[in-house]
Length: 479
Image 1 (spheres, rainbow, N blue to C red):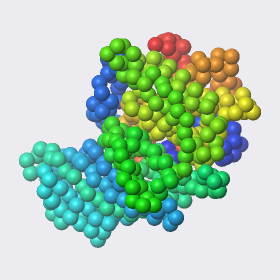
Image 2 (cartoon, helix red, strand yellow):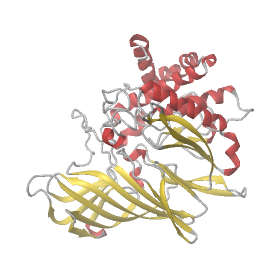
Image 3 (cartoon, one colour):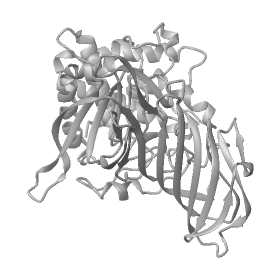
Image 4 (tube, rainbow, N blue to C red):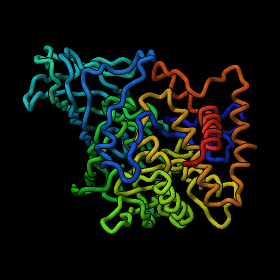
């Protein structure tokens, strides 16, 4: 989800102020693919994430993309012009061609595709320009008409590659690739680049199969000013300098959904700590995971409490799930302008500044919110990112479970706060209030198309879903 749940029914402003409905749950994803039946470390993350995920055949999802092509890897390069907002990009998409096709349909919104070259078994089989590409604004797709049908001669899937050149613009809203205002090292107003892809905004930045079940690996490179720190889901592999600019190349990611890909670039500082949350070593100890919090330079002294909380939560989640943290690093970033309270991008988790900036003057209520939101988003690193829903009709399980984990972890770390009492008095009441309206809906909602997705990011999905999971945990036990 790219939008905060609708809280207008509860009289809450759409700002960074406190709220009693799930703006801190805000953007997140869920489970539909079973976790490994084997306890412990399980298989390597890439293999684990590669399990087949199928759509619910009972759903009338009329705007899902055809399955003639199945992407396996995206190699993306983006060069945003910080001043003009113009973006030049390219993507090489490795895919399995499952049947003979005369056209290729993928998601694209607010981008212009300049050229497409199709390879089969490393040989060029088609090359088209903009005149062969049409766009459907309602379905947010691009249709690439090929000169002749390709593939499927032996009715056996073939390895294909699409090389696509495109252009776009930095978004003027808080979705896709957008600017967030901040202060640079000199104290002057500046801008940082941020992405918000959930639920269906990756298509605003590069052509893709923008559906949660269609997982792939990602390799990303980003050209930015040399003064910028560039971040993505994976660690930096290497950097190439070009005078006033540099291109940052990131390591290849495990298989994941497009909505979890993330980019942040700007003048940032960080503090770091080490969490013993990685796979077991030969001696039986867990490998260290470096956790960092990035902020605009002037605010780096405000996030020590949040960093300590993240390390404690991460280690407790590893023990609770009995499964190592799946990525080689974990970065948390304080974003001055973020539509939701947090976004669980895999390995690069974004938060509103109010959710990470904790000082001695911070009220207990905001401190409680900070711990809850950090736990909520970090739980998604397993439940939502490692295993993911096939379609958005299971959003309630994703967000309901993350809400339950967030409150449970807060209660474990600070039992004196009596966080479950707050849930019953405030959060559950918000869900009951929304549930009393004619606009109410079941926690599991049939999502027939992309236009319906954002409507279910609400207090019923988060807090009624959490209430159901809380009842199950009380009856069955935590384990």
